[in-house]
Length: 135
Image (cartoon, rainbow, N blue to C red; front, side, top):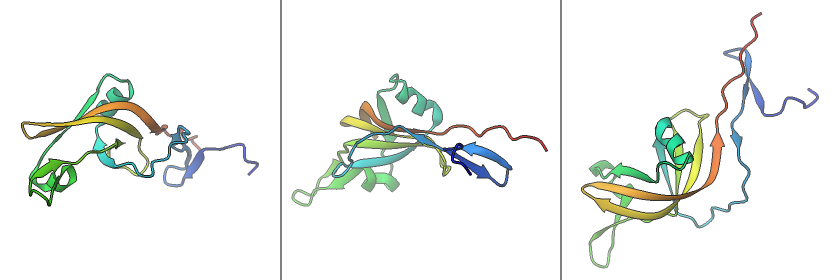
């Protein structure tokens, strides 16, 4: 009530306080950027955040063809879509880690699109819930 518990929310189901996602503050203006949103496994997300994974791969399946490519109306050929950044989400939960990562190049080989990653522009971390006090 006095404002000293900041960044926490009460989880009625678990009957405890949970810390909210903390976003690193940036003054990044994403207006005009082409951003591709992808879900990613935690292990790969952590590798990208620690700068050990520099390329994110996506198989070019028929169901996702329009997400990764487009057809040029002038010549009727299919080309890779170019993105400025990837918005990566860990899993499918509402409260999840995410990051905005720069794309420096996009390549295609053997049915796989490769997004060559640059610097992390923005990151939001999920912090685990506080242990509930037994009553």
